Structures are given as C-alpha cells and as structure tokens.
Image (cartoon, rainbow, N blue to C red):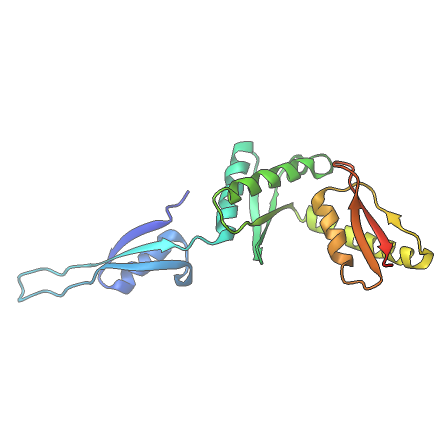
Length: 209
C-alpha cells in the first residue's frame, strides 16, 4: 500500500509539493501540506542553495478508508478484480467491483457478497465515532437487484390500493427490506412494516388506517 505521508525536496516549495503529489497520486485538494523548510539562496557565493522541504499527507476520506479495507479482504480471497467505482453520499460508501469469476464473489442469492459487506462494515466502523454504511456491489448486481425490488414494491403497492388487502412479500435480508420501506415511505396511503424472525423476516405492505 502506498505511503500516505511523504517528505520531498525541491528548488522551490511548489516544486517539492508537486513531487509529493506525483508520488502520492493525488491532487492538492486531497492533501495537507506542511512546509518543513523554506529554500535559501546562495550567500556571498560561499554557502550553497538550500532546498525547500515539505511534508505532504493524504486527507483520510471515509471512502478511501472503506476502499482500503475492501481491497485487503479481496486480496486474501485471491481473486482477480478491479474497483470500478467508489461513491460517497451522506454516510454511505458504495463500492462496485468488476473482474473474473464474479459469480463466486456474489455467491448463492448474494450470500457471499452480503457476508463480505458485513465484515467490511465491522472493520471500517471499529474505531469510528460516526458510523459508515458500506454497500458492496459486483458489476452492478446489487443496483439491478435494488431497481427490481423497487419496481416490485411499487406494483404490489398498487395491488394493495386496488384490493384493499395487505400484501406480505417473500423473506428478505435487512438491506432488501430497507429498499422496500424507503421506496414506499412517501406514499400517503400506505404503511410498511416487517414481521417474523430472521432469516424469514418479511415486509408487509398495508393501507393506512
């Protein structure tokens, strides 16, 4: 893993900073710069030029921390992969993974992916005061699944309105249930709630009384 802090010398502070940014692979807005020593000019032709010295540290962004942990876990699984995207939004980091044999990473009904996501969440939050949710996706498998669940929830909500009878959905994991609750929470005519015990907990869609 690349060092997150480097010290660099240069004829000028700007040159030293640029060298540090090149090594870290970052832009100026992603780092904190500490000027250790300003450059000095030659004095009376006797004392030579003294270079600028800077210490540059990468700002620890939440999504970067999550990515490092996921890469650590995937490295231990010895599979070929690439991190296609890392998105951060309001306490949630979504990481999409692509590569060979991604079916193995997803597992039966997403069980392997869910387990990896759970472990990554525990690791990233063990020392954090403000908790972060991690959503791991593989070739947008989870995003497509979310879209499918949202469409299903909307169809079933119309059925509830037409028949005026509750609909009980099939058992789902907590993340899937959250998707259903979220997509229907703004509907003024409906209420959703969960019933049953894990792993057979289900979402009920009902008319408000």
